[in-house]
Length: 466
Image (cartoon, helix red, strand yellow):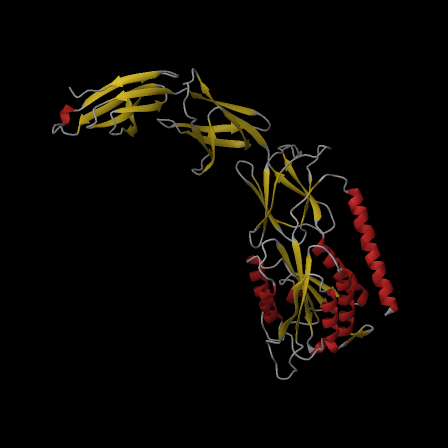
């Protein structure tokens, strides 16, 4: 045991040196994230097979010793709660009891001594109901809005009850109950059974067991670093000032939100985020750029690259502008796609991914522009004819419709209201109003009025039934 303790001290000291050196190398500015509480549930196999001889002692004795040392190292760790569940230890086999699982120590602060005492008292007796244990573990994590729920399962075999632990693990991850579990298998031959459950590690000796368990706990407690490079069309990291949203890929739970920036060295700023989670990253260019299933390697710096080449679209009025007019929007769509991706006001600038776009200007009548080309780091200027006003006075009992004259063809603009006085904002051009009294019984009593709208000017029209 003295030799083992010496080895463990060496392992912990080595990890401390590695982490210290990594921190010294990362001299870039770190974007800190919100402090979360980490909750680690240790699930220990106490089925009868854990009495088997392994290395210097029985598997249960070695596991109790290594786990106890790890728990002791976590004493007074901030933002951390621990709990212990065991299975196969309350009912003797035979008969087989697939409900033999129990939460021995619930989550609380500063409970390391309770955990260590309970560990010593666990005696292997029965079978290994791993799937039912995972199902029961859902209730071990009290409701918490800002917690990372982690399971570390230590076992020397597969589920004795014939159930599939993969399905319940995937369900718990998809629902956001837990982060992808860690499974430590004592001995060989269980990888195919557990790789779908979580991050699986096989250990073949005591030293390997200690190193892996300590490494898993370090991953659970420490964030790691990454940077997001927004690449232009030349594959250079020149794009910036774009919102980035990180979602957990299984549950689609929102975890982080940032606005990309460069640090003082002109590099994409470094982020410090949870390495235990796979991410879907939404980069809110227009349109949105999505990178799915991004994995980070704990303790290493990860570079996430996204193709986000952008140019600028400037939309402005051409000609004399109408004073005190309300902003008019322009619906922007990817060329050939009817779905709008942005509403940009006239007299504004906006960045878009390079490519071709179709525009729908929300004037009366609508103005459509197609195949607008946005190039890398260039500005495409779109000029919209300046609008004019129509001040219309008409009888209140008239049915009136406004048309736009396009060559010799009339295009519908709108049906006019029942109000006597109405003001409309229109594109410049020739218009025609067709009107008839509601009380008239003769179609040929319809009247029409043609007029012209000029940019930046107000046209006054009076319609009478006489």
